[in-house]
Image 1 (cartoon, helix red, strand yellow):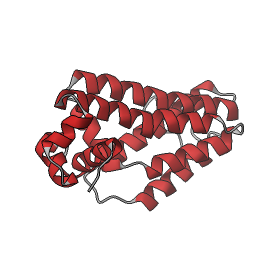
Image 2 (image 1 turned 30 degrees about the vertical axis):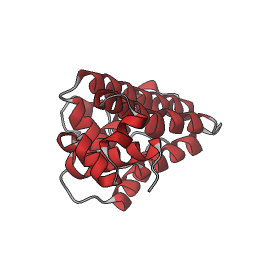
Image 3 (image 1 turned 180 degrees about the vertical axis):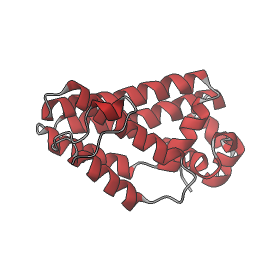
Length: 194
């Protein structure tokens, strides 16, 4: 069976999704592809080089290319809906593997920080086009990123339909007026209306 360079990245994601970054080993990648280590070294000069390229490939495929496509959408509401579809379609278990890996590897961490910042910025920029309230736009972007990260880190059974529904509910808040005042943000409860 002939394999392409991209197959090594696809299998790297699979390994991260199935076993986490600790299971990401040369022997496991080659076993899953049904190739020898010689085939691996035909495409990559070293295991370290492959791991670096895997992280950059993930950043490009799951973030920069998707965000560039989203930026071509002129309508901010449709852009945010498109970003939500991208978020729902991510390989969440592999993303969780990258995030866990970033806690032990400074290069992966730097990329993870960049990915989070890029995702946050496009959501913030889009929200600012919808609402004139910078605080509301920032809160929306923060919540969207926290929601995605939390979903990927949760030990609950994956529920993509649930994630999609929660994102839709979050998106609806951009157009809704604020119903809770600053007292909630300060940790006090609002007084009931009489």
